Image (cartoon, one colour):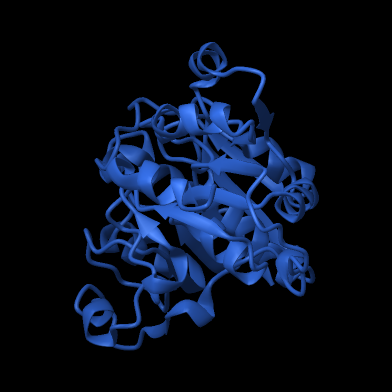
Length: 309
């Protein structure tokens, strides 16, 4: 199959949309993939090229803003429709996959005439959609997802069983655990625009120093806070940037606890049996079975962390 994927990444949008699509591609290597992305600041489109997929890069006029999802397409909506329509009208695509918070039924209905199937991967309910397949691993309420879909023939793939995780995490489990923690990591996503990483450090730093703990801070390439973080850390901390999956799994195996965001990475750690404290940092992180993720807010992270030391 010849498949086009529309997704983006940046220091504001984050890296999850691109990484999820790359993970999906690995499950179906027999297909041909073309990614369409915009040249946002601190994007990770180099990972698309590293994986050997075709990449079409588009310019942008509008800076993405946090939780103002329409800005995440980077241009006026009519321009997005025009540019994407021009691309897909020049060759036949069997399927178009959209993993993007800024797109709705208006664009979907327009481009539907050029392809056999449109698949949407999304976990927000801000817009109506007109797609053939709707994927949402964060929700298992069929009536809720149906309420935003205008296509009566949509196939719904909802619930955690539709989570798209990199294949390397499957079958990997931590077997050895220490009585008390000695090594931890802080991992707040690929971009962490509000800099929750720094907020966590400030909450637990005196406990880290008092108990001489080793803290690995995991940052994505789209994180713009590196210089700020470097000014806050001491010998107990090590910053690790843009780990690949093998490196991340190796890190998970040697730590005793991870303080992380309530995102797909939380599922990865759960699969590997990594002890974790999860912070819910955006509204759409409505993960099912919340009791499995040891969730807390930034204001009580210190008290929860002390129980492990």
